Amino acid sequence: MPVMGATRFERFFRVAAGLHVDKNDLKRYGEFVDQKLYDLLLAGRATAKANGRDIMQPYDLPITKGLQENLHRFRQIDEQVELAPILEQLAARPPLDVTLADSTESRLPEIVGGLSVALARAFKLVYPDRKNPQTAEWEGIHELFDLLL
Image (cartoon, rainbow, N blue to C red; front, top):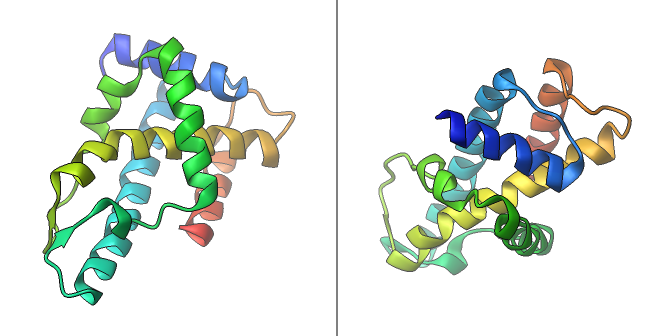
């Protein structure tokens, strides 16, 4: 991630949850985003296929009420941090045997933003006294999200 992206990333986590992240966290964050976006797309693909479609629509993605609320929080935070352009790069998706509708494709950066807010808030809920998450905390939060997504 370019230096400007790293700076925005760090600022995002400070604004979202008062966390201080570093370069090692950038790699962990990228891995988290890749995996969770892939999980959402796999579930969306299953929904589209179950409905006899080869095109995944936005409503095929399993966007829960909580994730929807974090999408709204992301929009508010993004006005300050301007992270959306960087998230477009992170929202690169693996090839699937369905086509994403343009409306689905255009929502991916915002969905990554919502996942990012949920991630930051999860750190504060599970590890309220931790300001700089370490490897064990990242692993614990990742396992938590694996249970839910």
